[in-house]
Image (tube, rainbow, N blue to C red; front, side):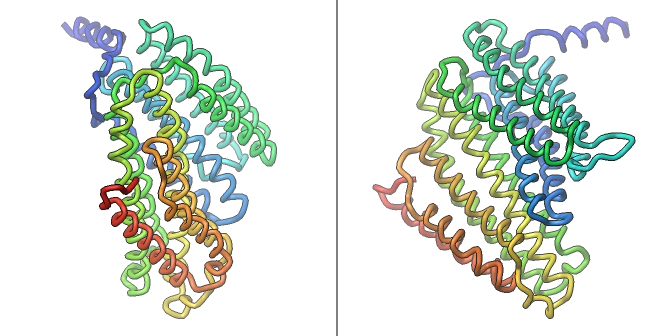
Amino acid sequence: MGAGRSLLAVTGVLRRPLLTEEAHRVTSFEVFFDLVFVFAVIRVTAFITHPLSGPSIAEGLLLVVLLWSTWTAYAWVGNQARADTGLVRAGVTVAMAAIFVAGLVMPEAWNDHAPLDPPVVLAVSFAVARLIYLALYLRATAGDRQVRSQLLLDTIPQSLALIAIITGAVLGGAAQTAAWAAAFAVDFGGRRVGSGVRGYRLRSPSHFAERHGLVVIIAFGETLIAVGEGAGIAIARWLVLAAAVLGLAVVVCLWWLYSSCAGPAQRTLERSDGPERARLARQAYTLGHLLLITGALYLAVGVEEVVSRVSVGGPGSAGAALGWLAAIALYGGVALYLVGRSAFVRLAVGPVRAAPLLAAGVLVVLLPAAASIPAMAALGLLCVLVAGVACYDRLAAAEPAGSA
């Protein structure tokens, strides 16, 4: 009896994945997968901020891209076949374990020490996740020769990228940074070229759009977590509470900007068909959302620095200048997000309003001022600017001839 049940379980796992329908939505198992992703994002933030430095800001960007390339791979798998059944569920579970291990060692991503070499562990973990993705996608598309041919073609740049990542991890130091940067250029360059090739198919546009909207929320959740990290045990101080509320206000405004264009973008995706739908999905979502996620993560870094400054020394420390590194993370992160939002609108909806892009330019111009004024003042100024852009966008969207 027990052997029969075991055989049925094994057969259930090995049977062909259950392909999704047009109306398929995000499953709870995929949300669970995203929890592991957000854990890894939190660890990237820890890597950047402990301690915050020029190299940590640059190297953190490489880690974000590494994470995003893995997450998007499984977003495509879950759109092709249900992620909560059979072989796909088993494979995604193993991939979750690999990403969890990668997240654990991320704060040591450039440190070489025994008995385990964290960079190598990180590289191997992501290689395992990528190989599982390839196997699952090939299995899910067993009856579609065109998609399988495109997937195998895309494995060329992906394999070169994995080789560079593992090689860089073994070499360490500056060679690791250079090798990983080259790997990501090859990987995402291949994706950009591949988006124009007639091969992939997006089975459920509603699932794909919903999945990316949820991950943006998760990225913003990291900013709220960063408030607690920066405050420590000083959260009862009024100045810390004020900084926390300002950080929340920035997040809410940025989410409004995303939500105002997410619906029109999804409708565009649903109206498109065939190769055009797949191209739109890869450019506007797979590639375009990278800027949004990266901007949100660096916003979290900046907010954590502001809250930390006002919580450490009490009211007397509030007059200390924010500093260049924290200003780059705070203002640069929001500027990157606004550029990403404009790119998303341009790719998925059409004409873009100038206000978000102008605001991104203003933030870059204001960087020297933000670095030289008190941390609370810099965060307050950012909040006012972002709130102004969000309000303008809402008012413009209410006009009958307004664009997204």
